[in-house]
Image 1 (cartoon, helix red, strand yellow):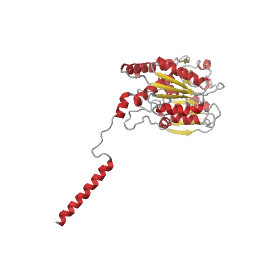
Image 2 (cartoon, one colour):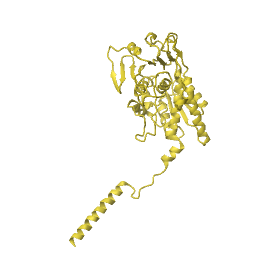
Image 3 (cartoon, one colour):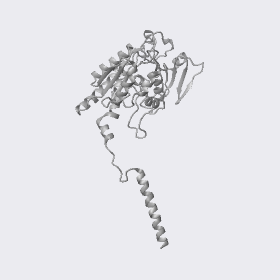
Image 4 (cartoon, helix red, strand yellow):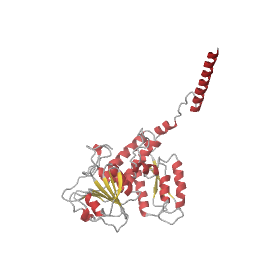
Length: 371
């Protein structure tokens, strides 16, 4: 999506405004529809996303439902595979990884974290790392996570033609912030410094949301405070620092012009008196982490209560990117085209030929000298 198509959110200097994330999601989904339309005009089936659901978590079921509806609306193919026993997920995941018809995979968590099992809660992490990077629409496998935390943006350095995928929810936060007033500066600052001079507080350090959000915003140049139950860390100047007791959640939020909340509990409330005028507040949690009425009384505040619509758009965007980079017929044709073998075949044959030629040459020289 080009910059001139970007949806701009306008703040109100007299009071706070509440933003429907759908205004941010819409241009991305329109772009996806156009790409699918182009594929179909060339006789190519739309990318196929496979979802694996093996729990009774209401939020997971709702996410699966949203995903299916969005894919259908935008012309993408979606197949939900429901598994009665969590122990079957690994085999189902292997099958999906190996299926050439499948272009993207999403596993709806938590799985082993919900029920007692031999594998334990950490088995969910194992499943995330088991998704092939060529099918990982969530951008949470080891390859993509490692590259994110190392600020590596491409898979194929130095050619730099295959972009790394980013976690959907964290990416949705970035895309929302790009469209909020006074946050990102892409006009006068280079890549990696679009948030230079900004301070951000992220309240949550989960592997799904908090950590990747903090890393992505730090990679864009911001100073980021990452707050969890027992600790506060600061990303600054490409380095991670653990904060001392003098740094508190209140001091972090008061210093910040952007606050991202992702606390997964109904009881948590961010004190609105900490929020500064003209700040941007994004709630990523399924619960409201802030008193909305009090927050909207603060002048210039931009408040985004839910990011789900943008998350689904990023999921679709990642699916299309995976298809274009790894599964598109033209890409497969290039990968499958046999390379022309050199005249000498294997390099060892070349080395042998050079060695034999050298020996013959030495013998010939010796013969000349004797004669």
